[in-house]
Image (cartoon, rainbow, N blue to C red; front, side, top):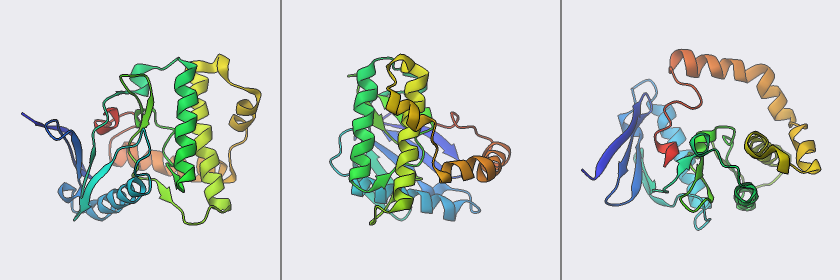
Length: 212
């Protein structure tokens, strides 16, 4: 069979089409009470992928409309499975994050290791842009979000390649943005309750398409 269901949950169905080498995220299959949110998330991902067209390490948007998003398949293994320890991986990952920001996109979900891939050639790639922000103005809000993108990458470097952290990177790790501090103290407990008690998944769960 050329089609394989990777994930089916309250937000729809995610399918791998091996013949076409694409991932399909179908928000039309979401439950009625999560349908609106599922479509919003799919729309955010489509907008981010359009803005990042041609950036290496990011899926290509093949089609989007009516709640169905089709993107290219990127072979690779999720970070928490591959456990990259080569400093070159993290140097290239930094280049990738900076490329996102140059295109006025912040990922907003780089803390999750399943969103980071290690390709067969050992290069980084990113998936799951549902929470991404595309900003026409790179003002203070954008800079804070971009700073936290970088901090989340450096947290992974600290986990897998701690000895190669520079003094500047350690300072960045020690300086979360005001948004990050507010999130940790107010919104994150609510997020954890909703995702773990209501939707019944944790950050590394339900990550079928994030491993591809």
